[in-house]
Image (cartoon, rainbow, N blue to C red; front, side, top):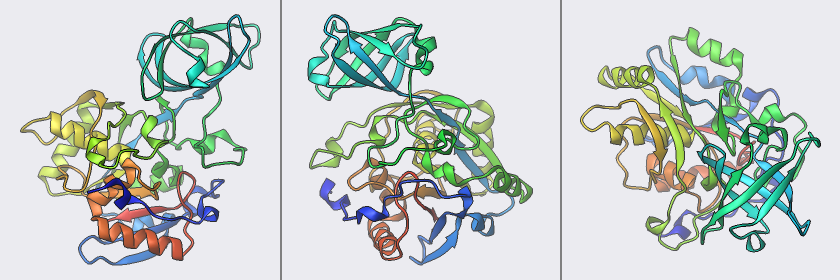
Length: 343
C-alpha cells in the first residue's frame, strides 16, 4: 500500500467555492458495498434510506475563529497564527506563518476587532513538522480577535459564517467544520426523528490533518495529528444497545467514525464505553470496523487520511469507481461539496 495509490486528478472547477442553498439540496451519491451499485439522489432524500430503530451519530463540534493576526514585539513583523488544539489553559498547538522567523521566545502582539484589548502570545516550543506551542496571556478574549479559517482550496469569501457550521454545532473547538454534517437542516433532523431514528451527538474537534495530504510514501509511516474527543455515558449505552440488537449505527462524517471506533477500541470487551481524551486512530484499508455500519461523508482530497478511511470502509476499488463517477457526473467536491451515503 502506497500513498500514491490514493491519488486522483480533479478538475479545479469541481471544487465547490460556496455552499449550496438550501443545505439539503446538495447531491447524494448512494453506494451499496454489497452489490457495488452507485445511484444518484438529493440529500433531502436521505429519509428514503433510513429505518425506524437506526442510530445516527453526529459530531457536534463547533468551528472556532482560529485564524489570528499579530505583530512581533520589537520588530513589528506581521505573523499569522492558526489555532490547532488546546493543550491546557492558555496553551495551544498552532501553525504560524512565517514559521521560520517565529522561534521559541518570540512574543507576538495580537490585533483584532477589539483594538483596546491587547493579547500577547509567547512561542514556548517548536517542532520539525512546523507546529508551534504558544502560551497566550488571556485565551478568553481570543475569539474576539480571530476569524474562521476556511480551507486553502476555497478562494471566495464566505458571506455567512454560519454556513461553515452545522445546524447542531454546540461544543467549540474545531479548526475546520465536520463537513458531512453541513447538509442537514433542522427540518430534516425533525423528519429523521419522526421516522423513529435516534440522533446521538459526540464531539471530536477537527484538527490539522483535514488540511494536509499524507507526505510519506508509505501511509503506515504517517503520524496522524491527534484530536480531542468525547463520547458520553448515554451515547455509549445507546450505541452498544443498538449493536446488540442488530440495529444500524450510521456515522455522519469521518470524524464521528474515528471517534466511535477509537472508543470501541478503548472499551475492551464491551462494544463501546464512555470516552474522553485524545484520538489518534489512523484507519487504513484492512481495518476491521466494530461500530460503523453505514457512513455519510463528503468527497475528500487526494492522498488524505480521510480518503484512506472511506477506502477502508467501502473498499478501495469501489471508492475509486465512485470518485470517477462523481467527476464524470460533475459532483461538487470537498467542504462545500456534495455527499455520499455508503450502505
